[in-house]
Each structure stands twice: as structure tokens, then as C-alpha cells.
Length: 251
Image 1: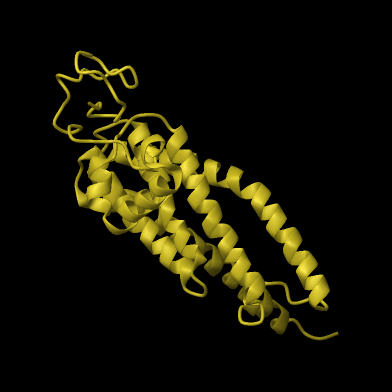
Image 2: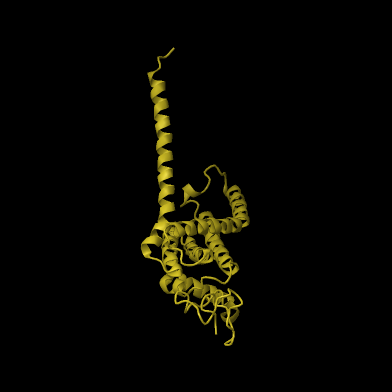
């Protein structure tokens, strides 16, 4: 049998889970029925099958996936899953930019002279990205999860701990696999990821869809508002400077 909260395998006569410490006999209804994700059960189903089934479930049946996802059980497996799916998506995205640089001119440098120079610079870019992306993914996961959980606490929507929020953010990272789709992959990945996090927070914390949507969309709206305000201030400053220059008499 398995722990109803973290999904760790336990013996039938074991009163407490050695992984998360929950009393198995008195497990609350909110965590009953939760089982390990295929990725976390890869020792049984296999690594490739585990990640493919986890991708399929999280991307195309997120309600059931996050309803059954254990809310504890450690951060290592979710982090590794996010690293794999995130890196595959990012590297595929830059590979398409390299192959389709004539069709995607705004995404690549314009001052590169010749195919050899372009290939060399592209190789350097990809190498730097491959080195830095894993650290960026992990840092982003902790910052994004911390912000989400703080907002959940503020709206009284956090029925489980920080680990549940982190696991939602990590397994929602699978949406980055859509970056492998040329041209429209990045907006699809962004929108899909937002949808997954909203559904994941709702199901993992047992909160309402309205609270989940607010928690996810509020930081994005505030960022957009700050960007618009900053742009308006810059344009206003430039316009005022030009107006002052035109009013000065020529000497």
C-alpha cells in the first residue's frame, strides 16, 4: 500500500509514513487517494515512460493529475522533472532560432557577417544557455513558488504547506515542452503554464478556482502595470525634453 499523502510505499501494519510522518489511519479526506506521479514511480514504470505519462497527465488532464498528486514527498523529483522538461523546451526553442534565423530575424543578432560567424555565435549562445538555464530554472521555481504560496496565505487558500505549491509549480513546468513548436510555441507555453498552475493550486490545496486564479494572475497583472507605467514615464520624459528643446531660440 501507499501513503495517501506523499505516495511513499508503506507496509500494511505501519501506522505512520516514514516519508512525511502522516498518520495513515487518520489521513484526512483532503489527501486520501493521492498516489505518486508516474515520474516519481519511475523505478517501477521506467524513466522514459514515467516522464511521458507525467507530461501527458499534467498537460492534457491537469484536473485529475493535480487532484491525485501527492502534496509532500520531497522536492528532488519535481525539480529534476522541471529541469528535464524546461531544458528540452529551451534548447529546442534556440535550435529553431538557429535553423530559422532568416524567418525569425527579430530573435537573432542583425550584425553577424557570414554564415560561419553566425554559426559560431549561435553555438556560443547555446552553450551559455545550456550552462545557465538549470540554475535559472531552479531559482525561478523557488521564487515563483514562494510568491504563489505567500499570496495563497493572504487569501486563506493554502490548505497544505509550501511543498504542495512548489510541486504544482514544478510539474506545471512541463508546459515548456511547447517551446519546441516553432513560431507559436512560446505564447502557447506561457498560457498553458498559467492554466496549469491555476488548476494545480486549486486541486492541491483544495481551494476555490477564484482564489487560485487571483494568486496566479495578480503578480502578472502587477508586472504588466509596472511595465506600462515605466514606459509612460519614459515617453513623458522624452516628450518633455523634446518640447523644451524646440522652445529654445537658436543661437
